[in-house]
Image (cartoon, rainbow, N blue to C red):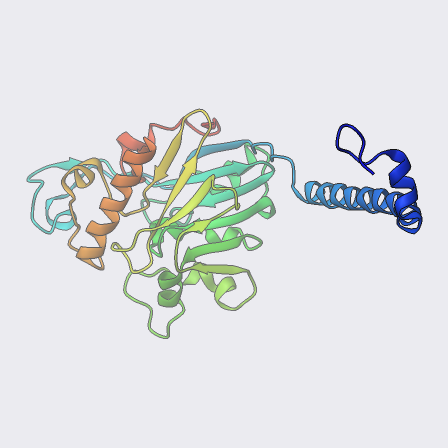
Length: 306
């Protein structure tokens, strides 16, 4: 029966199929209950997913300091050794020897370890251990020691930090652990790592040291087979590139100069171009480790750049 509005009247709905009506009465609570259960399940799943999403991590405090790691020699004529195209005429450069300490939260990293305390004429006046004591840091607190390459003026004091994990280019590691290490490789300070007494992580590619993108070991071969540089992204100063020996002084940088003693000319130039492009893109400060003019861009230790 239809009502004047064309809808079934309540009387008709009640008498047309009692069994169906009774079924509807019993089914509706079931449907409502099932829908509520589905809603609760969705909410529970959503909550569990949210539990699995960590809140944005608070930025870790990062700071960088340079340490004198050798006694500078007299200014050096650079034309013959530091340019395979003899580009520098009578120019003399004041070379220095620098190391770097990075504080990442409660963790410490060293970048290069300078000359040994026994090195003739160029030994540091203060050891790295004694320098770090000025900021109340003991050798066992150093989590990582990153090495740009295997030459003696960058590796001389590494043995003072046996608890640290050594970060080194894979091809550098292959060279110093080979039966016949290449000329110029300073093998002895690495004995603890070579014997397996200390931890080493050879790096075939770039290494995000702390896993948050703030400190990155950059693959820059050419000076040696597995040479590396370091990128440190400071909050206030901005990104800083520490070159290692990918470049030795500003004129090298400006003219794409290649020292005659470098391992590979093409790799040297490619690494230089990479560093220049990173510096351009990130508006980074470049610190050429051997150039007295460049290391002064960072405050005198024990002060830190942030």
